[in-house]
Amino acid sequence: MLLSCGAPSVWAEGLKLQDLIDEALRNNPDLSASQAGVEAAGHKIPQAGSLPDPMFMAGYQNEGYGSYTFGEALGAQWMFSVSQMFPFYGKRGLKAEMAAREAGSLKHRHQTLRLKTISRVKELYYDLFLAYKTRELLLDKGDLLRQVEEAALSRYASGMASQQEVVMAQTEKYMLLEREEMANQKIQATEGMLNAAVGREVRSPLARPAELAPTPYLLSVDDLLPQAKDHSPELKAKAQMLQGTEAKIKMAQKEYYPDFTLGAYLFKRSGIYEDMWSLTATVNIPLFYQDKQRQGVLEAEAAKRQAQKELQATEIMQASSLRENDSMIRSAGNLMKLYQEGLLPKARQDIQLSLSGYITGRVEAITVISRWKALLDIELLYWSQLVEREKAIARLEPLTGSTEVSSQNEKNEKN
Image 1 (cartoon, rainbow, N blue to C red):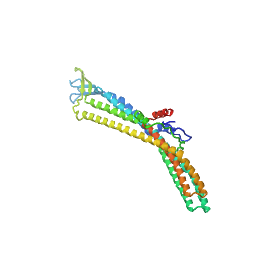
Image 2: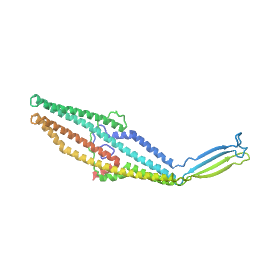
Image 3: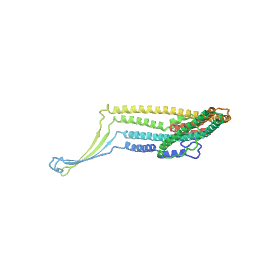
Image 4: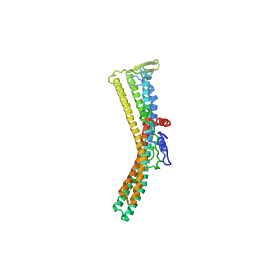
């Protein structure tokens, strides 16, 4: 499988990455909260573009305080009115556009969070795999160290070696036990973080991750940069914010124009007094525009400049991150090839030759132990570089959008 939201290419039986990703997308509380925020923002759009609620008034006017004078006095009457405020032409549309831009920005932020959650699960999964692999390598190389210890004891018993060689081998054994304990602690800590990222209780048991194989990577920075510019949800969120500030400027300029309130009134009287009615039109006067409307325009223009700079900063940051991760992927791949094809075969050959030489008395114990350490370190470095490479590939997905990266990988691989 190529770079995507799924698992890398070859997996043995064990804890499956794709299962964890699917569970995280269902249960991660941050994602659920973000989705609810997107839905809430969508409901704001029709509210922003609607008319204000109409106003209804009912009242009574009496003459004097001594008695109820309705029908007896000229000024006694019941009063009813209904009024509706109409914003100046264009204001409602701009308010709806501002709300829509905000909702669009939140939608893209949610997509960014979704991709980052997937990337986070992948990185923790790879860290957990490395912790298990480290412990397994330590246990495996512990068997080899025990051969060295047994040879040292045998040589010491026959008078061919000093006690110092036995102590040296045993010291390395205890240091190896210390590293095993640290690997166990790393497994427990990583499992807790992975459970939290997935949305489980942190003490939930996890199996060992399936065996890891390198993910094909056939892209270049020149491929990644335009994809990030066109498909990055984080950049799209910033662009939506910028467009929202442009609508805000137009809205602030519209505030120089008055709103209108139309009213209809009915005065209900009785007896010889006829009912009365009236129609009114009311407008607000932006008299204090220097302190209010003008400042609103300046505020909106400053917000636009801020959004422009934030978009520019995000573009620069993403380009830097793309180059950094691309360089890390290529460097890790070169080192893995060096370890696998050059250093590891030589190190395995060296340890076998030195162990045979030590048993026959031709090689000193310190030589065998140094060869043993070199082999262990090289194997650990190989798996560390593999994990760092996979983590770097996972970090590309929030920057570019995984579907587009996968498609380009497939296209390059076919070519």
